[in-house]
Length: 129
Image (cartoon, rainbow, N blue to C red; front, side):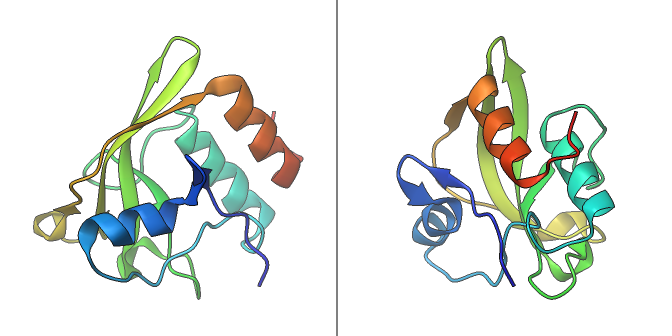
């Protein structure tokens, strides 16, 4: 399986989350191995073009490496738009059926230039508008 992982501040997002939560997670980015329609829908949600599918309203960023089913658990974040930037914060682990299960990690936020994120995503999801 070939995935396109998120690198923030020079470190894989998963490493940031595991270090902060002090535990390991079996999750990956869905970019690069899931069906093209799934990848486009995922990116559209991440870019705030489509509503979140998690009951918490948060955006999934890393998913189950076998099936990408949110019921298996995912790392999610609160994603907002601040002018020319996306802000990812309040990272946590959750699933799509048990709102009580949400575990927020004690880590900061990432501010990502919109143009940079779009460029990176389009390099892996060419059908993205």
